[in-house]
Length: 190
Image 1 (cartoon, helix red, strand yellow):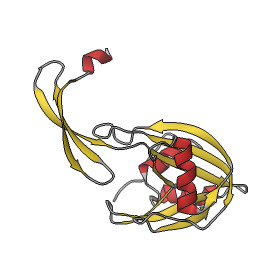
Image 2: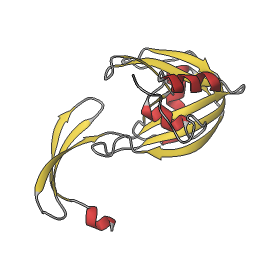
Image 3: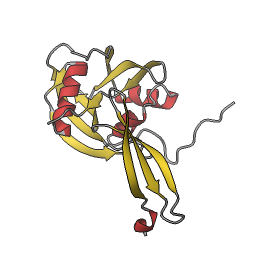
């Protein structure tokens, strides 16, 4: 059945290098009509994000300005997997760099496709329990981050209010906490 859905790649060409991403244009052949259509693919290394908990179950969260939306978002720590790193090594490094927290017991929570319509990579989720402050945060040149410790109830209130709406953070958090009542019934809009 799924073989009937696969498009054949006829050709590929490189597009612009966008610093964090590389653009690729693929000419793809429709499986039924055989029409050839040019499609955009944004290539990237894999990403990581983590639910990090202190020994007293405080969540280590971050706020940072996100250029796409134009304001500071509340989210779980995370970043990109560097060449030669495993997703665990990247998660441990990113947590330390962004928050100054480290150590603890780490468990893999699985991966998601950030947007398979045009992204080619995965975002790996990790749970770190019992993390402790190890050093001062050392964010990258393009980062300015505030670290916040939150209780589970503070985090779920931030989800319910819409303050915390970063999709990948919600994906990781939902593997540890029940974030929404089931079935999910959004509030009526005015």
